[in-house]
Every structure is written in structure tokens, then in C-alpha cells.
Image (cartoon, rainbow, N blue to C red):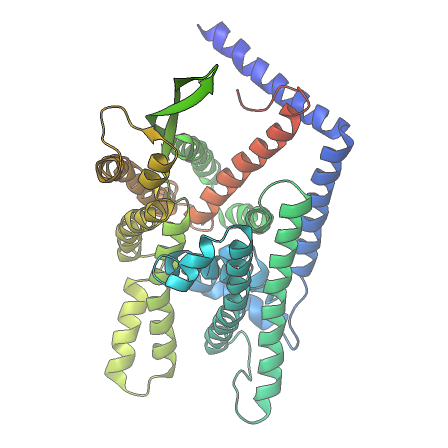
Amino acid sequence: MALGSTGQASGSQTRLLDTAAQAFRQPDVRAKILFTLAMLLIFRFVAHIPVPGVDRDALEQTFNDNAILGFLNIFSGGALENLSVAALGVYPYITATIVMQLATPMVPRLQALQQEGEAGRNRLQMYTHWLTVPLAAFQGYAQLLLIQQLGGVSDIGFTGGNALPTFATIISMVAGTMFLVWLGELISENGVGNGVSLIILGGIVAGLPGLFGQVFLTGTGQAIGSMFLLAVLAIAVVAFIVLFQEAQRRIPVQYARSTFRGGRMYRQQGQSFIPLRVNTAGMIPIIFATSIMIFPPVVAQFVAETADVGWIANVAEFFETALSPTGLLYWIGIFLMVVIFAFFYTMVVFQQQNLADNLQRQGGFIPGIRPGRPTQEYITRVLVRITWGGALFLGIVAVMPFLATRLTGVQALTISAAGLLIVVGVVLDTMRQIEAQMMMRNYEGFIR
């Protein structure tokens, strides 16, 4: 059994390397891969271009002394620590996309655009771009105010002589975000994989060497044992993520078709299935929960720094400490909100798909279930049951950094759960796209 398993693993590795080599031998596939890498290289170059008037020494000291800023810095791939033009990353665009997805079923005009086909989707995409600009401006100004309160920057505001420098800084950060969105769309059109996801992946991966360097610089004699335990946990979490990302419940569907041959009507039966993913919501619940839970300590820290009344400052300091990313209450809130948002977002997406109506129009039915409303209710019951597994999975993954810190004692290494999901999900999606390119050329793929 052991020899067989070893041989199978070796064969899988050989197939993977062979397919990768074959991909580079194909001129068009090689061009797509090299184009993607070139765009990611441009992104990392832009991430090191600071906005005007930055004191690098004061900024570095501020980030070293504040856990909340360090936590926010992970989402930008280290660009926020440099206060570069790409400090906001593509997260304002992600937020705008989520808002548009939630607003579409509630606004009749947007719902009508969604049903207009390619032209309607292009219009919705344009609206998403427009919404990204004010969201990026608001987020950039809020982060600048927070960093100013902590001493990282100065002269932020729209009064007196500070108005023009502040406006220039915010415009630079908004322009950087839109430039990254444009790079991501170029990758999606001319490269391999989802461009925006790859931009986020590039930022996360680029920050890993610095995080590991902090672990070794701040480690003690037990650092090697802690790092080994952390590596084992990381491998287990990645396997856990892959298992749930790929898990799905297949509901059998039959199609009855009528054809005329020789003046007679024949009924043909076809079989298929509806794949309901256990984790339909993906990483979005974690992004929602993290965005909401990081807001109270940021506001509390701002109030504590500016309040003139003693008891208000004391209350703000209490909430700042209690809801800090290093505290237990923060991670309990993250777990509960991730579970709630997983159900909410899954149901929103499911309602937009209209699976029961589409099946009925196409002549399909689930064996033993009446078409129409009974089919809708049956699919909803199944979806709710499997979403419990997906929601609990996301909740566990969301609090995994806190658990890993407690088990290993490694305080410097804080990889966000959303980042871990992005890394695994983007790698799987990119592998599938490369595999599809190779399968069209009769080569054996990565996944079997």
C-alpha cells in the first residue's frame, strides 16, 4: 500500500512537471503566462512608488509599534507600509463588486441590466468602476487620518495649506487602485487566470518573506520548533481549504427532449446534475467580517487619541484593547459574522440564479420532485444543509491565525485567512485554466 501510494504521488508530480513543460513549449500558452508575470512585475514596481511627502522613517516606526496597522498592511501586500500609490490595493474594487452584487436583486434597473446579456453586464461593470472611485477616496482618506493620529504622516486635512497636499495624496492612491484594476483586467483578457485575484495573490506572496524574516529575527531558542509546528499547521489548513473548495453536492437532473424522425415523434432522456458547492460564498464572508470587525478598534483608537473628556478616552481605550486583532473578542466576532455572512451571501447568489425556473424552461426536472416551486424549495433545503458545512469551514479558517499564534507562540507571523483562501483558490483556478488550454491540445492536464 505504501509503495503504491508513493508511486502514485511520484506519477502525479511527474505529470505536473511534464504538463508545465508542455505549456511553455506552446507559443500561445507561453505568451499568456509571460504576459501575466510581466503584469505582476509591474504591479510590484508600482507598490514601491510612495505618495508625495512621505517620511519613511516615521512611517516605519509607526507600523512597527501598532498591531492594527500591521494587520491592515497584510491586505495591501506591504504597500500600505510604504504608503505607495498602490496602498489600497484592489480592495475598493472588490468592495464595489460586492455592493453591486447585493444591490442587483434589490434594484429593478440593475436587475433588468443583468438580464440584457453581454451589453447589460458591461454596463454593470462600468457602474462598478464608477463606484470604486469614491470608495477608494473614502478608504484612502480614512487610512491617512489613522496613520496621522499615530504619527506616521502629518498635515492631513482639507483646511488651510493642507488641502492641496491631502487632495494630491488621495488622488494618487485612487489612481493607483484604478491602475491595478486595469492591470487585472488586462491579465484576464490576455493572460492566464483572474487578473484581480492574481493582483491580490501577488501582494500576499510578496509579503511572506518579510513576515518569515520577522519570525526569525524576533524568535528565541524555541523558534525552530515553533516554525516546524506552524509549517505542519499551514499544510493541514491548505489541505482543509482545498477539500472544502472542491467539495460539492451533485443533484441529478433529467432532461426530456422530443425529436421528429421519419414523421414520428421520439422522446429522448438525458441526464445531468446541478453542482452545489459547499463553499458557494468563497472568501467574501471573511472579507465582509474582517472589514466590519476592524472598523470599531480603528474608530476607538481615533477617539482615544483625540478625545478631550477623560471618561470618553477611557471607554475608547477599553474598546480598542478588547476588539484589537490580538484579542479573543475580535476573533469570536469574526467567527460569528463569517458564519452569518456565508448564509446571507449564499442565499443572495442562489436567488439570482433562478435554478428552478431555468430547469423548467429547458425541460429539466429533478427525479421525484415536481417542477417549479417544489424544485425551488428542495434545492433551497439542500443548499442550507451543505452551507452549514461551508459556513463552519470559513469560520474555522477565519480564526486559524489566532489559533496558530496561540499554539506556536509565533506572534510576528499573522497571515490573514482571506489571504490564505485567495492563495489556494487562485492557484487552483489558474491551474484549471492552464489545464483547459492544454486539454485543447490533447495534453494530459494537472488535475486528474
